Structure formats: C-alpha cells, structure tokens
Image (cartoon, rainbow, N blue to C red; front, top):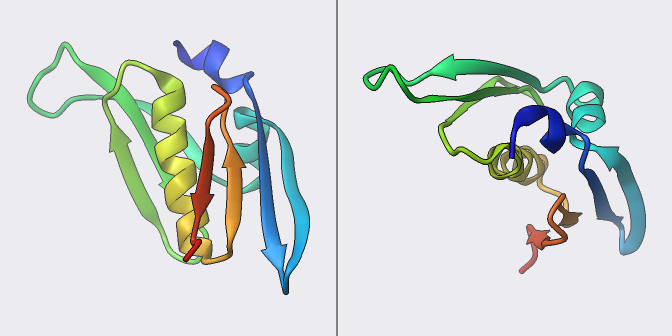
Amino acid sequence: MNKIEGEQKQITIWWWNLGTKTLDFKGSYKEFFASKNIKVSKIKHPSVKDVSGYRFKIKPQYICRLDCFDSDYINNANNAMLIYLTLLGDKTVFHDGYGRVYKINWR
C-alpha cells in the first residue's frame, strides 16, 4: 500500500490511567503523526539505490529515528507507532489500519 492510501486508514488507541480505560486517539495515521510531532520522510537505501523507504523521527522525550524499507506503508507506520507507544510506558491497546490489535506494555 502506498503512503497516500495508508495515511488515510483509521486507527484507534486506548490506554489505561489508574485502571480506567481512556480513548487516547481515533483518526488516521496522518492525524496521529501530526498530533504527536512524528515526522515522516521518504529516503533511499544506503547501499541499494533502487530501494526506497520511510524515515520516522519520533520525539516523546528524546529523538528516536526509525528507517523502514518495507513496501507496505502501514507496516512501517505500525512499527513507528509501536515504538512510540512502548516508549511512553503506559498500558495501551492499538487497533491498526488492517484491523489487527496490538497490546503494548501488558504483563
């Protein structure tokens, strides 16, 4: 899936605050990245010039850079979101654009 189609897919994020389930975000990938100040840019592979990918700059408290070279934009975006939500440290449930459910920081 290309970037334009992938950015329009709808996602939902729930997190728990002192045992209470709270809706953190409901909308598209593009809206989430804009609200959380995550920058997305297109890059070329350092050694194989025919391959392109995406760079995600994640800034919860410090800068984390993720370079992905998967052909599916949603898989790349999911990896960036999983890193962001893991760094926050809260118990979270993330419903991605394909309908998959990820439970983050559950023990």
